[in-house]
Length: 246
Ligand SMILES: Cc1cc2nc3c(=O)[nH]c(=O)nc-3n(C[C@H](O)[C@H](O)[C@H](O)COP(=O)(O)O)c2cc1C
Image (cartoon, rainbow, N blue to C red):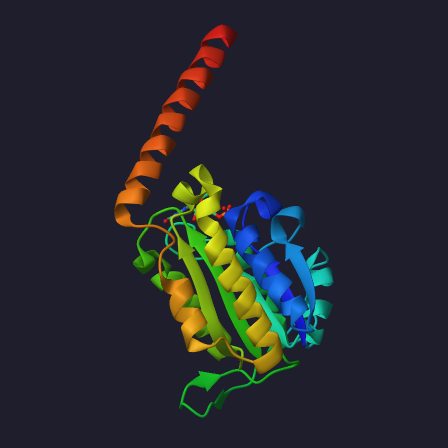
């Protein structure tokens, strides 16, 4: 199995998303897969301009020359695409969405009805048939992932793939105050990677354990209190800097 992880966090390798994706990659590799990881934050990828050259002038090829030139060959080779996609204003980040939209060059302009009766464009080339999601968000409630998961599921279905699993861990704000709370989840996510590489699926027990938030509501509020204290100190420090400048 060849996996491609696309990390759409603005903080790239420094973020919590990278920790989750790193654990998944470790499990995938242990299970015999090869893994490429791309950090969109370190790349230059412009939004789709809707020129539709990829559909009409030069079918299958994007007209824009930027780092999408590195992403597209890897996408064409991968069996598994992992969207490592943090929640930004209730859905995927602009970094993630830019890559998603630019994959429109995999489509032809024509129309057909899929097995579910939905009108689709046929393909110029195949996107990875299997898709996974790893995600995090600041707030503690799993409901925060719903729009992001719905977007990626819809995009996957539109592009003819199948979502194997969404591994979403809420409460990154508290996790960053006490990174050790994430350790059991990192081990479970690595186990999920191993299972996907070896069995093509995440076992229901592993998925159920990942879905349990990494802390109780009380513990979240305790860590959130530490976060707010840190924010106040930081604001005071910044105000001092600003005052000294003026
Ligand atoms: C622009 C922006 C919007 C965000 N919107 C949300 C949000 O709607 N809900 C939420 O729970 N967290 C939100 N967050 C917090 C991120 O999901 C959180 O910081 C996460 O850890 C980011 O991933 P990273 O650690 O890999 O950078 C937002 C962060 C940014 C920068």
